[in-house]
Image (tube, rainbow, N blue to C red; front, top):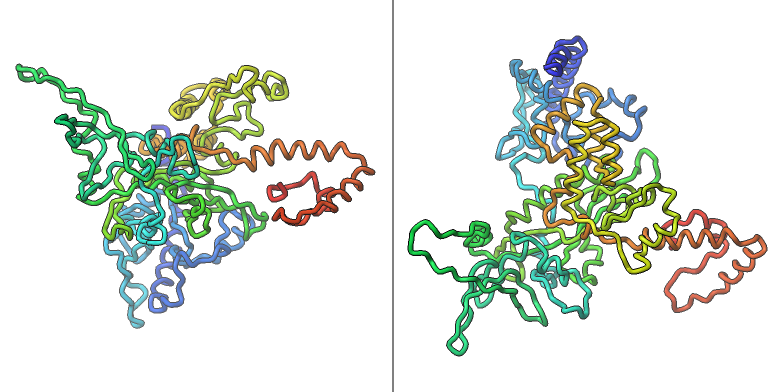
Length: 574
């Protein structure tokens, strides 16, 4: 009630009324300018064609304020991103009579729009600009299919689909070279995410559906396949024998297991189509450029098809771009990506398979996530490994204080010595539960109790911490937090916590460049160079310059440069 009263007072304030007048004025100007340009659509650029330097949002506060007046009358669709206005201003405008002004709420993603998404009719030059213009739909309507992953095209591309594996392999511990040989894809996934079906002799066989074996020597059996795999080029299935329960004579005393659906739900969803299981490998990195206004740091997401061999996944045309931003963080960009991945994993999508020459239903699951150590730490809610007392996302390696990292005990725990006793492993459900407990503690307990739990758990969710930091912020920020907690509680946390088939403790591979080369090797290098005397530097420079690199397929050694800049080496030098 207190918040509601303050909010109602804000709506009737002079400042709020002035803001509404300003928005109405901008609405009328934008509407007139857009009507004037409808007959000259060839001069207009699509939202995707707007250059990066047309928008300075979040890059330079001074330039933002100077250019503020230049955007008056500009079509919001030409800005390259949707406009988001305060929902309460929308409610107030909805109560007013509809006029010629542009409806700001028409530019929100996910709201209602016309299903056909047709372009507005061209206005005659003699038509007055004061008349209400036609309703203009968004560039991407809410009900239009948006395929973030070009897997549909990959299945239709014969040069790629003929090299893809849609069933995991069992190498039996020998000649392991590809991701399609992973145990996770073969048998560690949940029932609804495994390879659901295979074909043989024109028939479709699904997991968890009884199959009658060919009788041999008068003996026949019924088995239930639980997963499919290939071994030695042949298709196999891991099966279990069902236990037969003698039916009771009295009605109503028997039980029917309801955990496993029959028939397999994927059979109903496929509608006699072949199902293709397409695992992918997600990749994220922050491309750091200079800190000028035009080239800031971009966070990018890409993926490769895990069913291809490493020789093909290393090809540039097989690395597919998903999204990038120099404003949003990795977790913010990942939210729509994860939503679509979960949709493809549970419902699939229709595509044309060039190998089979027919339509198929394909499903997508993330097999693993590749990133450097800071990026992997952020998506798994692990603090920065370099400064954290709980640096590992795989095990419970920890030290009470930072000074203890140089002690013998910490080093022994790090290497699992002396008896190969490694720290206890982490399990992904535990970080998920602890992250939610931290949010509840921040809202119900004191700050001291929250910090104690934070140190105990050793996790840091960037999304949750940002919302916690706004706990005592402006009124609109607090109202936004209340709305999220009430209507979208999952958005309070890292979206990777809800990514299906993903285990943050097991599926985030270690990048050797950061862990070894930029870790152990870099520190040894700086320690070695720091102990050399000036006279010794000339000797080592001569030795490096005389080193023969013929046949090594490496660039010439720049001895003078290495000695002068040994303290500031970056990844390419290692």
